[in-house]
Length: 486
Ligand code: PFF
Image (cartoon, rainbow, N blue to C red; front, side, top):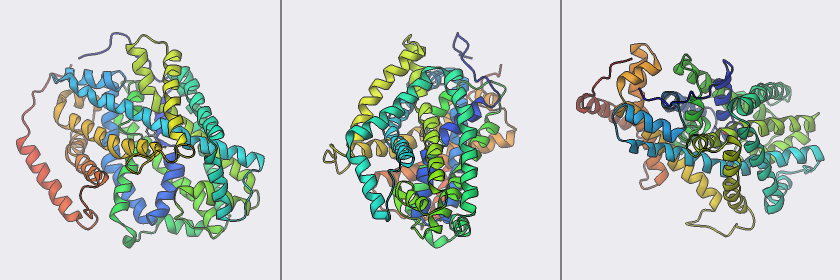
């Protein structure tokens, strides 16, 4: 078995990996994106499809990433390269690692801008800068916030600096230490917010909105958005989970850990919905107001409520912490690769990466003001970063890793590393070979926009296709040589 010569750092505590990976997964995606997407795509039906995507695609791909990281003992590039050689395959597979590392870095370069909004809104809440009496007033405050490149740039730079400070301190004393208080802290704040929502008068309506299944509201676009979001919210194919997995001790169960992280991430997304929607409904506001939901509707609602400012502050502290525990994970793959391969100290690797990040994120930030006119094929730089990562690189990387585990890697190594019962192992293999790839190809086809297929209307064909793929795959798959398990 190929292993690095030096022992790799490991998480200190029993919960180190779970807290760090949940910190990565729980972020703006849960508190900002998930509630507004649920609002836009019609509530309960979207939530159900999202849960199916988490189970059918998210969990198997996350298990694969942790497996690759732990057995390959390195950053995505090194770990995937080692795993390929261990199975006697071409080292060129490590191109998947390059893509994942780049993907995490590019996500971070626009993520810091949105995280910067959260910090800016926290400051506005504290300093009374969010006074307005209508959604239009709130929209002008939001527009003014984005129109000033100096303040917007300062807030996103602050997020970048905080991220690099934590990552530069190391896996145990930087990442693990910070998530071990930020994660419990944010969950406590979320629970307090839900308690507040329960007494706001809109709780019943919020429950119905989130959990009542209305099949008519299930659009094909909503289904695809749910699948794409499953990738984003679980931080998949961006190097984060794989690199965190490389610090996971051997005795931890990959399946159990993955299920814990996926469950925690899903619960936080639903809890964020239960914290936000009651306040929105209690004030007669629109749930489907898009990305402005928490930056326009929510602050407006808070103003009209008793202790609203206090809870507004709590909300943006929670959001900022959620964003920070995610942003540190996006850069860990790059920092780990630089320290392992380029002889840099963690601190220099983090600050070096930070400088390049700052340049790219400044370009992304300028899309909202000075660079509003700089577009390519109708998209700003910020939108390009989002499109390239969430719509192309994440699905492609996830597909590559699923197929690599399903068809390319040595089966004995996989079995040894996962340590599952034969039935559970067989289920995981079926998922990474057929179910996840088919799901990912469907998102991919949609992202490219070449065909105008309404997948929601044609789902029986998809089931048939899955059956045909499974049959063909199992019949044609070349027998792979089994390595003796050591
Ligand atoms: N999962 C994070 C969220 O939901 O906000 C986003 C994310 C984190 C994506 C880390 C990718 C990543 F590597």
